[in-house]
Length: 191
Image 1 (cartoon, rainbow, N blue to C red):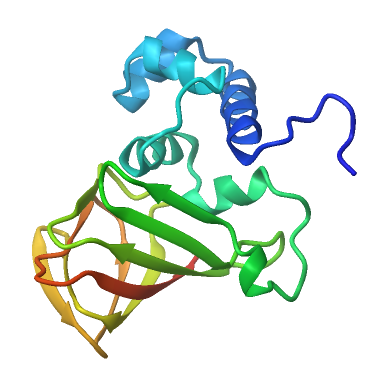
Image 2 (image 1 turned 120 degrees about the vertical axis):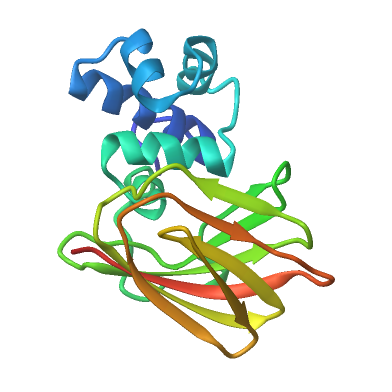
């Protein structure tokens, strides 16, 4: 049972958390807008729960707040259990970009690694303006299809069965060239 005054839906809890993070930093909407490159009106609508953020927008906010996307999403969930049943793994869909993200093993206080399953439709492009946590370690293992991952201005073509690993310190970009979708496992390890 949820406590009184705590929003019920994940989107409502995310909206509340985004507002709380801005307040914790002592930033106005204008200041956050300047730092994140997202309009003040969009940020206001996000914090009121009137708009769901795209993956790219959430990535920009995570960068500003120094969090991985999964860590932010975990902050709006209840205390995560040790065993994460498939049916209870948080899934976030960004229909606009064709990106589906499943937190297979969400972040947990005291642990540095997390496992994510990502799916991109053919032609999908997901850019990230900067590393949310500079030096975060990434291991990307492609299960189906092909993905082009740009890191440090180098494009890596990662095919089924291949694994790419790197430390993220700069902008990155995921692109599914097709003709089929790509499904991959991303393991992140905080520095």
